[in-house]
Image 1 (spheres, rainbow, N blue to C red):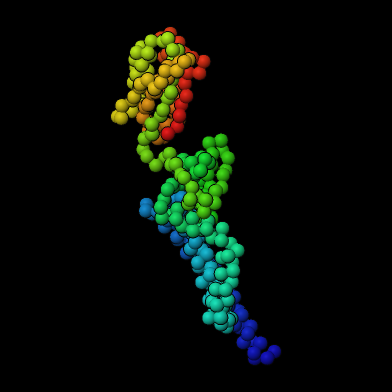
Image 2: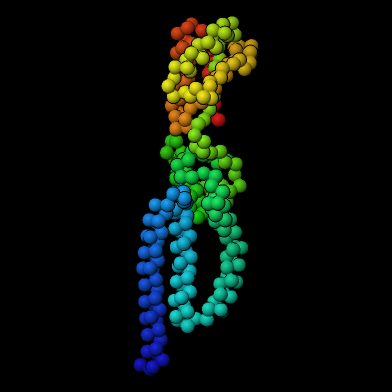
Amino acid sequence: MSARKVDFLIQLGEAACIFLIGLLVIKILLVILRKGLEKSAHVDASLHRFIINAVKILLLVILIMMTLDKLGVNSSGLVAVIGVAGGAIALALKDSLGNVAGGIMIIFTKPFTRDDYVDIDGTAGSVRHIDLMITTLVTPDNKVVTIPNGRVNTAVITNYSRMETRRVDLLVGIARDADVDRALAVLRKTVGTMPLVKSDPPPFTGVRERTSEAVEIDCFVWADTADYWTVKYSLEEEVKKALEREHIALPRTYVDVAAH
């Protein structure tokens, strides 16, 4: 075997060692990074996977460059080739790169965090993951929805979990000839006895509109965001029971609960 072949095999072995050791070092660094992120109170948990994946890709690129350099590959030429190839790839994958850019914007703007209940252009659910290219939601009926980050970044987002309290809106209908003042008194008494309804801001009740079939009454109450759905359904049930108990006539369609 010629000396040149021996040198090449040695060089190849060294490059392989660098690559394998580099993979081990990257794995260790990622474990350290993951533990550090879990202990950090400044980085939201929903961004952990995003940051880890981004760092992993960066470290792998550096490792590949080091390995190729050990094999004697001209780095400057390689960079030029990567630049040209990168331009072509960027053009072909512009939508994917737009999703990555959208993910970066989500990190900086933080329109939502993990476990927030959000509505993104009509798709509502709890945030499960924010990855490099997609955001994953889980709907109330346990469907998994993935949305490209590029779309998320330009969408109208409603975050129902950001504020500590939410208003529950109840539209109550009573018969047109019913005693309105008595109905208002019943509503105020009912919401005043519900333990999860907040007194500050105080509940509000008032006549919205008189139609040909009914008198429509608005009833607005405030609750902790975590108690929203409990208050929403219990309010509807308790109001219906109270009106029937007081013999206040109801139209065919008497109540509608709106989410805000």
